[in-house]
Length: 411
Image (cartoon, rainbow, N blue to C red):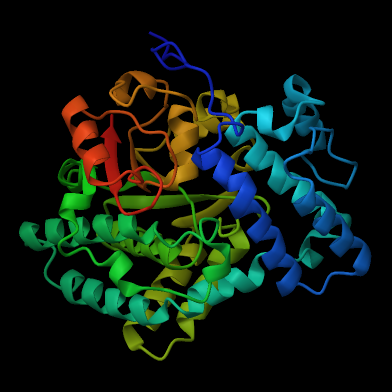
C-alpha cells in the first residue's frame, strides 16, 4: 500500500503575520528589525548594501511580495513559483512561515550574497555564530566531560548505555534554547542553566525519550539522519549523539542535513559543522579534542556525511519535499528532526487544534523520526485538553518563551 504524501487530517489555514498580539506579528515588528540592525553593525557592507538593508527594515510592515531579483542564486526559478500565490500581497497578509523564509531570501538578495563565487560568500551571521560558539565553550567542556565519564563505562552495562543516551537526548533538547533568531542581539550570552537537564523534567510537556532510547538500543549498524537546526551549542549536542551512535555501532552511517545558505540567523550549514569540529580540535580540554578527532575520522571514513539540499531553505512544508529527498530519507532507520522551525514544517504552520493527533498529521513522513524542540512558536499538536488548560493557567507565554520542550517519536 502506498504511503500517504499528506496528513490524514484536513489541513487548517496557515498562521498569518497580521494578527496583532501573535508571535508572528511580534516577529516582524521586533525580531526581524533587530536581526537587520545586528547584521549592519557586524558587517562592513558598502553604502549601497547598507542602504538596501535600512530600507528593508523601515518598510517591513508596508512591503508587498515581489519576485526575487536575478542575483545568481540557484533557487530563483523555485522562488518564482513559491511567490506566485502571494505576489503583490502585503507581507502582513501572507502566511507566517512563507514570509519568514521570503524575508531571509530578500536579505541575501540585498547583501548580494550570491553575486560572488561560493568560496567567497560571506555569511552575514558569521560573527554571531562564532560568538555563540565561543561563549558556550565553558558549558561544552562540562557536558563533554559528563558524556565522556558516562560513555567510557563498558557498553555491555545496559543501564549505563541507556542512561548515557537519555542524558544526550535531554541535553540535545535543551540545547535548542540557544537560538540566535529568537534573540539576535544576545549572541555573546550563554547561560549554562538553560541546558541543565536536572530538574527539567516538568518542563518537557511531551516526553518520548525513554521510548526513543529503547528503539536505538535495538539498532545495529543502521543509517541515522539529522535534519539539523542551529549551529553553536545545539550543533555540538547533535555531534555528541552522532559520536555515541557511531562509537556504539548503533549506526553504521549518519547523515547531517544542513542548510545550503544562511537562514534564521544560527541555522547550520556544512561550513558551520566543519568549522565547529576544527574549533573543538583546538580546545584546551583533552576530552573535547578527542571528540573532534573521532568526528574527523568519521568524516574521513565516510561514516559521517554532511549534505545540503535547497529544500531546507524553502517555504514548503515537509509533506511537499521532493521525491528524491523523500526516497533518500526513507533509507533511514531513524531521523532526528531538530528545532522549532523544522517542527512547524513537519506538522504545518497552521491553526491546528492542540489536541490534534500527531500521528495522523505526520503519517506521511517516510521514516521513523523523533522531533526535539523547545517551544518558540504557537503551533503544537498531540496534547490533552486538561494539559493545555494547566499550561495556560501557569504561563500565558508557554508556547513561545522557550522554557518548555517536547520529544515526540513516531514510527
